[in-house]
Image 1 (cartoon, rainbow, N blue to C red):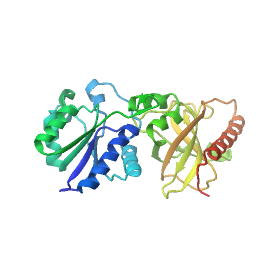
Image 2 (cartoon, rainbow, N blue to C red):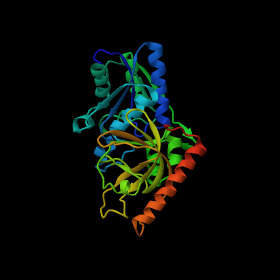
Image 3 (spheres, rainbow, N blue to C red):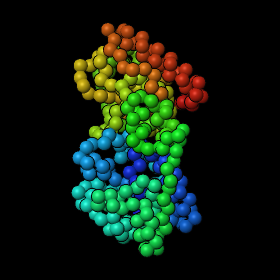
Image 4 (tube, helix red, strand yellow):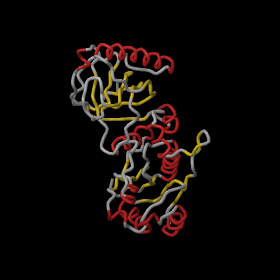
Length: 305
């Protein structure tokens, strides 16, 4: 979109939570008022991982992050900048100049705690002054507080890692998602009458607490189904440390190998269990399916017919 005049939300936006929503909504409003293209500029890797040398587990892969921004807010122009040593050492004011020169920025929107540039020397206050100097618009969005807690990616990561998925989703403002290409598995579920699809978490992405979740399964064609998803190492049938998300899609028949599927985590139903044999496992899967059906009825969630 070369030559496009943009209003740009700046940030990492891990999880695309309700605090980030305030930035997106401001971007959309300004874009409409000024006739600009609504855009989001983010990084492929978390800046603090490179700055501190300690990996920060991400709520979403970059692909899921972009997917959430596009799907929820309709902002198609999601720009990823590769965060490397050169980016990390760029002075904050040069970064602003770069946005104007390379991305035709006309208005910038940031959160109250946004830091950028070398050693994080760029602050919302400095950005506001720099934008005024360059004739750009600039909005700084205050913290969003929900249930007495500031919505933050750090807090949401903790909730997800503890399995508190319903509460995490309240702070996200949408279900936590995992999108992946369906992979070949052991096909044990098919012999048990509960065929499953197997997905994995991208490297660096936070793995939710092990156990069984009520999930909503969205296929490439947009069809939506209820699902029973086990996150873990499948201790009853596999002797491995490999973690997968294995989903039994209720009321679905078909071959999804090689197709992209989105799993939306709704509720942690129980912890992961190692059963004495596959018959006990089959019985529990059927009980889990009944529990998920009851959950969908209670919440009046719609699935494909």
